[in-house]
Length: 162
Image (cartoon, rainbow, N blue to C red; front, side):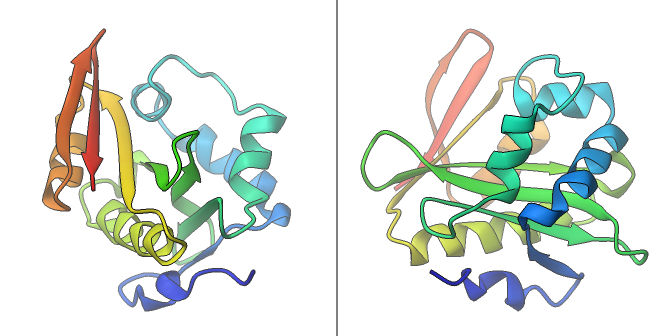
């Protein structure tokens, strides 16, 4: 199936779907994230991306999983948003990461909007996000899209949009 066209609607920044050839660029972006940003994105300390992590991000089938990236003026990846189907039919989990120096500029918001449209276009009626309870910025970002907290515990918050 061809990639969702929602990423083409982002006019404020260069953005595109991730591909298998992007593994090194994604690994480079990950290394430019601060330790705190990595912890917030992966919910625990994560010093590096495994081959499996890179595969999940870059080998999307455009139906059960998809990932989009924002690029800086030099063409480097500065942000990634993704969705992946969960074990619950009709449900996809979302995640986003933005390199620290580019945070607070609306890049995450633009990518989340695009990846949500892709997930919806592929039939996912329920979208979920798990974040650290302390991650006020992520919670505010997803609340702005209509997500609501449905579960809190062990320092984590699950947000859902049905």
